[in-house]
Length: 212
Image (cartoon, rainbow, N blue to C red; front, side):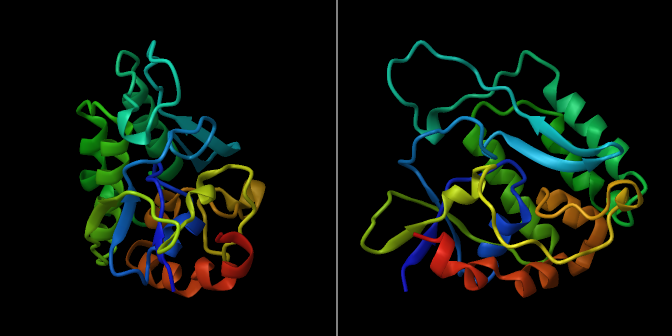
């Protein structure tokens, strides 16, 4: 069985995060190329009016050619961190576990990070620590003979299996919304998040169709 690898996303979708649950370590590619309009710099939460996309602004560079994920810098001259945190508060302040985890997540929105890769990687590592399922994160160049890249799970147009129903703050307005950001799961399920992700195991359910 090939080793699973991917590029880091911004508080990635539940389907993406479930893939890592029974992996011995999280392996991020250090030679992948940045793709626009993906969950690399965007996350989707459940706001009062339904799905709410939060996007990290990317700094434009005059460099000719494609940029590697490691090279993409965050455009920190806009108050995106303040805006994202305010959106989290509005969406999840009344959720069961927001107050339990907010002090661990808020610091990421109080200091600048230079690169998107660093910001995403550290947030993902913190997420796994918070659900008592810490993961060692390593970097690797892609080897098609020994590795399977599932970075396409970060493509907003990908259609993974629907995530099992759990209680969401605004479900009485828009019903259950599937495969949102992993932060939606954390604030709503708290300590049960790891069990939920393990039971989902999307890489086993859909391996033959999605992983290639």
